[in-house]
Image (cartoon, one colour):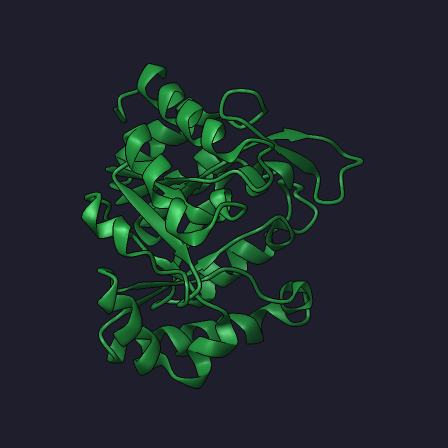
Length: 245
């Protein structure tokens, strides 16, 4: 299992300055945001690229061209970062699953792999007695993979450890994000530094290792000091006692 940083965490820095803090902190890779986010120093610093986030409309318009572009930066994995929340409404989720799975087939035919990255709304109410939209999409798809954002899953009331145990074969990438759960927050939680929130991070890492997750990708959506946040995330990962390390 390898460790990367999502460059969205460092988006306040100039593009050419985003990779150096990741390499200096000891991470092995960077996950890119969009096809235009390229920095020649990433490869020179020895950083791999686990995936590239690409808008679903861009992928749908030219899956072959998208795969060609992500392969040029060293990966075959394309991630849909988000879709409209209405697409996961109870009456729309089956259609959404069919559309994403068909798109995954087109990406696969072009030599790539398509994953979907969750936020909080894919888990509906978060009540354990209900089948969530996320679960319905997993059940209704065969080609589509998933990048599980454990922070937003936790904010929605889901258990990311259980999700990894159940669906690990479909989850090659994990977004390692900590959140402080707050019912009054717009999305049910507030992103915080690793270890300062309510996500069972140690359990996530152990479950990810057991599921043979390929990359754990650290992300903080709103860091006050991005470079410090990345550095301290690496320190936390080195210090955390886990079978994953």
